[in-house]
Image (cartoon, rainbow, N blue to C red; front, side):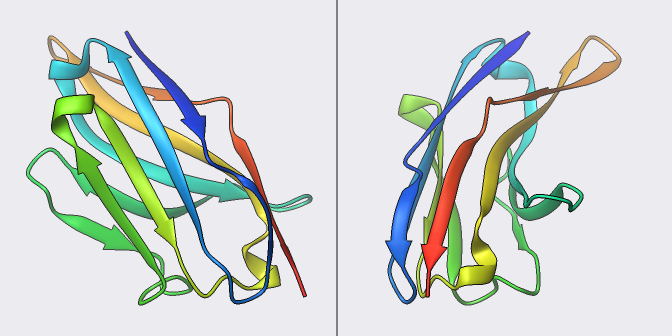
Length: 119
């Protein structure tokens, strides 16, 4: 099992920045990839950014050039640096981990952290 705890959300004006953190614990050696998803009211949960165990990253088109995903292996933490925030970035942001227990693929979710961008 992998447990995830997010932090760093809040209220910011358009053009501002926030950094989200996701601390992983448990069977962290089995993590294949981690990512950040977001869900606005009435919308589906969409992938924002991801990072593999090898360090490869990927981003949604809507955040490319503004958001950066990174990790601190020593602290088992993944970060999402969000710059030039827009009102449409307002959502609950969830951390996700995909991991393997033997041959079984599993995933865990954090509880979510609210990001609100005012215009």
